[in-house]
Amino acid sequence: MFKKILIANRGEIALRIIRTCKEMGIKTVAVYSTADKDSLPVRFADEAVCIGPAVSSKSYLSIPNIIAAAEITNADAIHPGYGFLSENARFSEICQKHNIKFIGALPEQIDGMGDKATAKATMLAAGVPCIPGSKGLLKDVEDAKKQAQKIVYPVIMKATAGGGGKGMRIVWKEEDIEEAWNSARQEAGAAFGNDGIYMEKYIEEPRHIEIQIAGDQFGTVCHMSERDCSIQRRHQKLIEETPSPFMTDELREKMGQAAMKAAKAVKYEGVGTVEFLVDKNRDFYFMEMNTRIQVEHTITEEVINFDLIKEQIKIAAGYTISGKNYYPQMHAIQCRINAEDPYKDFRPSPGKITSYHSPGGHGVRIDTHAYAGYTIPSNYDSMISKLIVVAQTREEAILKMKRALDEYIIEGVKTTIPFHQKLMENEKFNKGDFTTAFMDTFEF
Image (cartoon, rainbow, N blue to C red; front, side, top):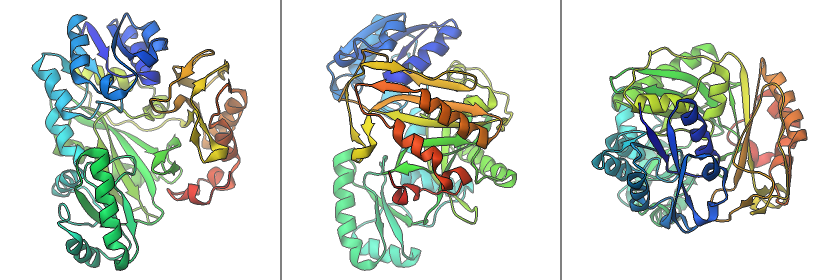
């Protein structure tokens, strides 16, 4: 087992990793930018190293600075959390070269799954259901028109190196192809340094359901059932739950087996997620694989009573997994509490938290790095916390979330708490009748 782990991240996920490391008897190193010098991860880690100014490119995305911090503190492993360098194949490779274990996927696995066109080809070869689409990247506008005729409108153009909805365009008719092609390439090139575009059939009003998987260094793979992430805004998840109210036992088994096929196809090592779109007929299609821990890993932990960060660390250290699949025993919901103003189109609201009171009680979990007096920087993601509840049934979980949201007090900045309170009262949400298009008609 590792003696000391450096956490190459910030905020709630850095604190989450520190907690598990302490429970495993592993020393921790927090790295921080000047904007995060007063953060809880810095306070609770065994050691802390400043790695640069507030701007991410000179701190949390600076591989030389992070490797230097690991070397001067004699860390024998690095946990990247999510975001930042968590799916950076070069970072994983550089860690290897410096004899520091990267607690995540191997470089070739990150490369293979990070490029969506390559990932899709791999999944098709493995027999994992995929959305009909172009074979590889589109060559030019004329190629895009030909592919769209074969696939049949509506179609969606996607950036091969994409994420967060960037470089993505839905096209309903041929007249709009050229404009969509140009704007998608321009946005993808600016965001990812790669303007490669591929095309798929656009699945109208689908569910976004992902399967949690784990694989060890010896080829054993298991799944830990699903999470429903359908309620999104601009392709950013707002709330997640497990089990999905749309799921059946038969579908869960099929999707679990498909996710394990996907993991085995790339000889996956670590904890990861295979994401699917599920149409109204419960036919499902591979979308992408995330080779890291997810923001919403918490709800899986709650319904199967399992520490996924601990599992990540053990796999990286060479431990074997049992190969047993896990199924939800409870119902869990997670609300992402962000420093945003839901009354003003979710405009970011950085600033100082003047008053903070978190909810408690049986079945309520808060993952946060915030406290009264903490200043939310404008440089990073606006997440303040993740509010998680777990109960015997979905109905009980919704009631518990309502109660927890009522107790949650954050003053000094605007938050998404009012949005989540209204969502919990929504009739369609309460019935489990929603798709990824839910927010298009949700009135706030």
